[in-house]
Length: 195
Image 1 (cartoon, helix red, strand yellow):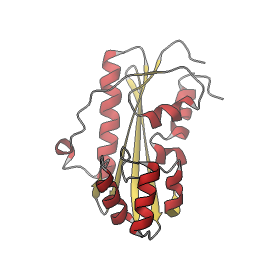
Image 2: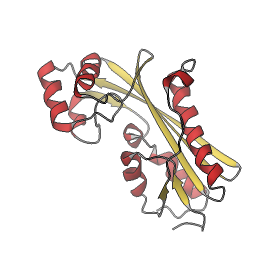
Image 3: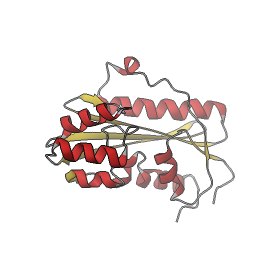
């Protein structure tokens, strides 16, 4: 139940939409139209990139819908400060997974919730240790799951869980792309009836 203000997810991500729908509150989806090209963020640390993009997405949509509660989020996967982008092709997905196999990497998931002139920022750091996978296992995974639109080339919420030895996080939903513990807490502060 909302307090009358519309809730807008500033994202076209299917994964984030599915996560927010878990709260069983009405919301709209609006594309933030924020330029995420690497060149704009080259001087920032991976955590700063995620936070800056989440804030920019929320601000872009909030400027068009000033009466709304707007949720913007972004995620950056990295290993030794090398940023892992969405692979886009089978070959690049296999290459990313081969690079990650047997090593730990980080996921920084940021969220900004903007309501009028107020905003709340959250940042979740997740460390994941991938198993030492063979090329055959990697190819099999990529062919079954087709994780071409996921940074790191895996879908943790699905078959991708089988690729890992260990995970450390404060919020498992952050791995999928939106830290729902933080989101639920802020929405409750804003008077939204979240069970």
